Length: 89
Image 1 (tube, one colour):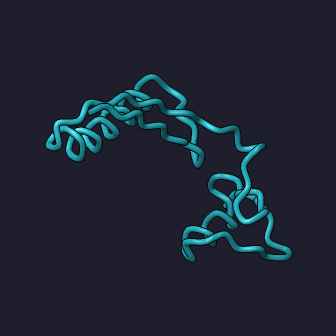
Image 2: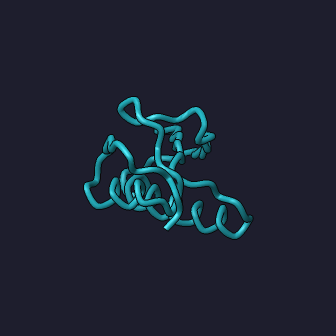
């Protein structure tokens, strides 16, 4: 049996070859642990999404390292907050 896995990596960018290699090694470990014991073969494709075309519940995700990002992370959900901008902390 064969499966094709497509991963949308949207929250961050994999900038360097080392980051890409590390991410792929984690993905390989996860897929291998789940699929190999069942005798499955697989192919994987990772796609990154530009932040300027990404929204969650109609909200533009906060800038990395911003106060809004911290709030979203703490609540584990998108939060619409008046007056809280994306200034880096």
